Image (tube, rainbow, N blue to C red; front, side, top):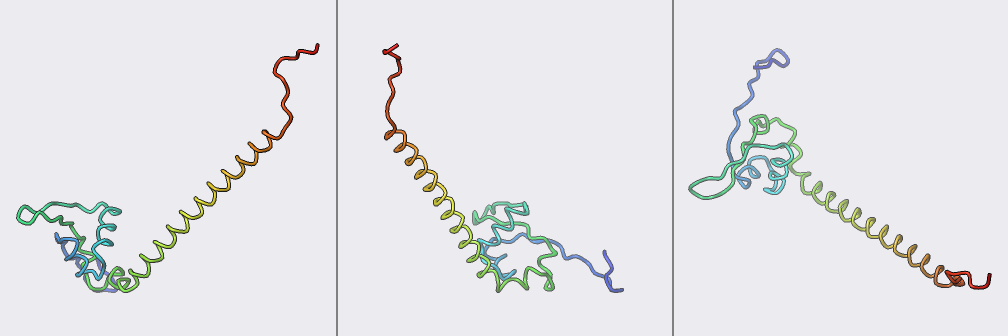
Length: 124
């Protein structure tokens, strides 16, 4: 038990939920819940009756006054921004590869155009 502003506060217990159920409960997409589970290493288990994966959602996140539920509507925008950033990174990497390839081709053209000298000095 922790006290905040002279009020007693207890952390709710954690719950085992499927990705879909956790997404509905937290206001997130199931893929976002899966990303949280991987990043924060939440315990997972497979249900025997349905074969679905369940993750143990920390009780702090299940409380109504958490920041995750407040950020729920922005989650779609955040995912879209992450997709755009990933695409920009891929395009920049492609541009760098193309630039390096063009530099290598220019060097090869310059070497091919240079006068060739024999490897053995015959005229000595």
